[in-house]
Image (tube, rainbow, N blue to C red; front, side, top):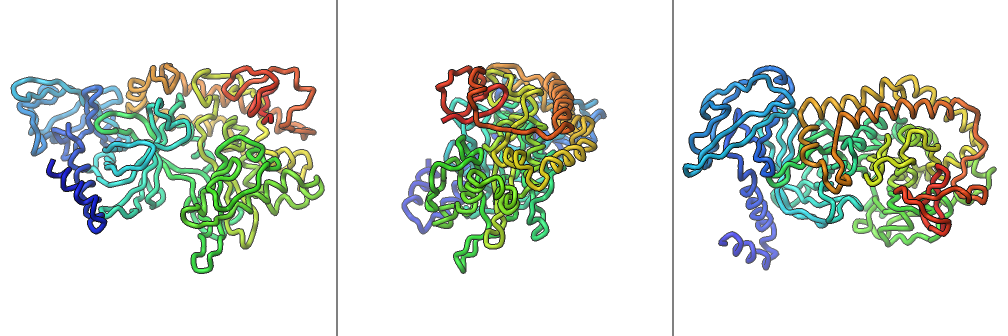
Length: 569
């Protein structure tokens, strides 16, 4: 109560705002790990109140052998006469033959009453969030336990992130994390040899029955994709996120497998900064966050307003309105207008002034390989490095959960449009017109690039090893079994059961058949059309929403007709 009264008093005095932040942070830190009653080699295991169990991360080198460790009580522990596997705490204990399914018993007495717990090991990093979080940012604690190392404790402003994924009825949330110091000032951290920054994302794979489709797809893209046109002018450019697998706890409750990753932003793409001294905009970044004509790069219906955070279906990501107002949509707008309204002759002659064609070719092939239908315009980022020197824009990728046979919802689980033989994605009007005009011998370049990639990154062996690596990581660490126990039957996944073994087999079989399907297309002759606007000759086919619900011909918006995606006004 004294601390609450003190905190309320400080709210009235701006002079003490920094001290208030420090006190709030201290309270958060004091509230964490209320169940951490013991240490293993000086490290606190994480407690899951749902299963009455503890989890600790140790190096993978101890897997399959006996692990010898010193077990002791914390200085403020309320336990008495505690034991692990029948051996009294406060001595060296041998945990025999540690495996992914190994569980060890703990018994402790509190005020004369005994309580039994379980202890398991992982070799994945463990991340623990403490605090109360929602749609708006609030201060919390972030506690990272790397295998065999002492916990690193940090502060951050944390909130739910995503569109439909942050709805109240969803349970396994995504989180946006912005690290701060004791004064509330942004503070950079580097994890897993990735970027050094204050902004990070915890990606839940909320409806993904494999949980890591987004991470694996991003890894594939980063492995093979050509660098953007300006890469020689800067360093360490990445046009997709990078991340690592962690196991997450939230306030003493296990949340499961997460992708702890970088966001897509100006820093990830290394775009040239806004010049404050001259008030000149250089780099620009926009994200297609909805469906509409502009999503597919058809002629936009509205004119932009540079004082607004959104235009048409696009969100302004850099420079943001709160930092620079007015900002600038003109580069994106002009490019979309050119693609949507230019003559075939002008398009073929000048498209490379507007679009980074080599990067677009790789995006087109990638989207087709994984049947990334939710990346068909929507969820794409578009970036210009320096509009003062070049208007050319390049794609960046995010939100690839709906790939390799995964639907955007699990009800229905596997509709026709996620099948391996679903028709070739049209992606955007850029690709349609490049094929129709064969600008700069586009079809031959597309085919040659596909054949080149089929020898390595698009081979079944490579793809199997890539998805297999993450399957093994989740399975052998025991995380897959914990995830299945935690989330099977949840409404996030339409009350289905998670089964990583079956899902991995499904993914590999899907990829095998997908490659055979694509070979018939890309090794064949150039198609004469790839049109995404429905005409009378397709009117007789059934129409479905992107969720697989059949609709009549009067339905407006995104529809699937004869295996193709259309936008109907």
